[in-house]
Amino acid sequence: MDQNQHLNKTAEAQPSENKKTRYCNGLKMFLAALSLSFIAKTLGAIIMKSSIIHIERRFEISSSLVGFIDGSFEIGNLLVIVFVSYFGSKLHRPKLIGIGCFIMGIGGVLTALPHFFMGYYRYSKETNINSSENSTSTLSTCLINQILSLNRASPEIVGKGCLKESGSYMWIYVFMGNMLRGIGETPIVPLGLSYIDDFAKEGHSSLYLGILNAIAMIGPIIGFTLGSLFSKMYVDIGYVDLSFFQSFKSILTNPLYVMFVLLTLLQVSSYIGAFTYVFKYVEQQYGQPSSKANILLGVITIPIFASGMFLGGYIIKKFKLNTVGIAKFSCFTAVMSLSFYLLYFFILCENKSVAGLTMTYDGNNPVTSHRDVPLSYCNSDCNCDESQWEPVCGNNGITYISPCLAGCKSSSGNKKPIVFYNCSCLEVTGLQNRNYSAHLGECPRDDACTRKFYFFVAIQVLNLFFSALGGTSHVMLIVKIVQPELKSLALGFHSMVIRALGGILAPIYFGALIDTTCIKWSTNNCGTRGSCRTYNSTSFSVYLGLSSMLRVSSLVLYIILIYAMKKKYQEKDINASENGSVMDEANLESLNKNKHFVPSAGADSETHC
Image (cartoon, rainbow, N blue to C red; front, side):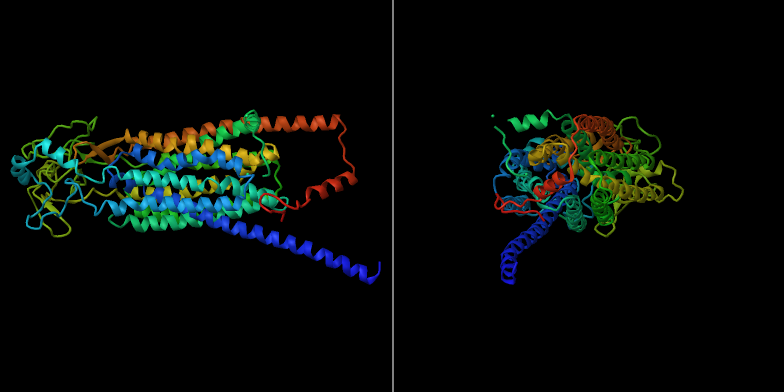
């Protein structure tokens, strides 16, 4: 070959190399953009989760209804997940993801509208502290209630007034906005992950997924930080042929896939239900404010969670785990996570001491039921409204439902902090200093309970680390136990099941279970039940029990899955040996060349990197 021919061939090869480099750079840009999308979606999710308590109180609704609002995200996702998973392989996947992000933004704006439409927040009469400047104290005391009882409005007048409340159903905006956010987020995961798995170098997809999930943790960090701040303020691969549903039949008759969907449904339902109400649990069990819980559970645990996601993807790549190996690794992480989760049962605090709910009004004896606790001689003549919730903490360490029910006769007025004096119900508890006073707010938890809270945070770090460590293995198992052309459909259908039966239902039945432990409900202006003011902290542990039962059930399915996978792949190896299916080096080299064949065109104009 002369020099001119050599130069001509070199010149012809350069455009091809430049084209490949351009496509590789395109995949990197896609990975960067997808990372931002993941940050945005996780940020929105955390903001919603950390706002559960405030949504419940702002709109005066129950925990089960708040769970339904939280599940509207999964409802929106459920509406379009099948269509996105099917048509995603035929259309331009990055463009679909971009459209989804735009819809997510619209949903966020819609969620914020009640803040502008409802006007200023007004305390209900049971929490109105300083509505009158001229009175010594507008909180009910024994003497004041005796006077005001004669002037109280009739139920008919109160009923007419509540009809004028314009914000009664404003929570629907939050419901619809959260649903739009679910619709917009739908294409991000199935199309984004299948895109990376299709066009990344062999063996690099798990590492990319680990990096992606780790970067996505930036969203929760920002979300928890903002949540803490705001809590302090008042107020698919290739073409998938689905002809009349053959592809669905293929994945639904795959026992390994069906079993994996079921076990992850149980597992994820446990995670969703537990995480939705973790801030309420911390508040009720350990007496910690949601602002502090946001900081400790966010800033401290999220970096650990991100490290677990990255390390999980790296371990799969480093040790070159096969399908059975990935399943064993995933099962190991689930066992470790459950082991740490069960430790929560050993750090429960004692039940709160609340006169009229957990003990008698004189503070001397516990009660068997919080319903209809009889008044004591110390407050029976005060004509108190027992439906009110204006908690005060007596210097005997007992919380009273209101100053009136504590038998207090006077207060410090508008001077902060507000202190009530001459509380007759404190006299019968045997105080020696005869300082029968109480200050506004519930009594804080003792030091032993506070120390248990920090143990809770430490266990939460380890629990979340092992949960995150197995996160990447879930995606890898789905794409390895189904046919290659069905990966996007398998991912989409899996996501649909998880969101429909886990994301929608889990917050609802967890919330309904938590509602059964409420011992004091608020009453709104219409005289109907509002949000829960305080819970039986001992009974609240059923929240942990339900989550643990779901995790144990998933582990049973994990064991069955690993046994079935080993049996299936051993049979394949035996059949291959009996048929003498040995490939020589030339055929192996030809196979490797075909494996890295770069298509000239495609739906997304993509290539392998």
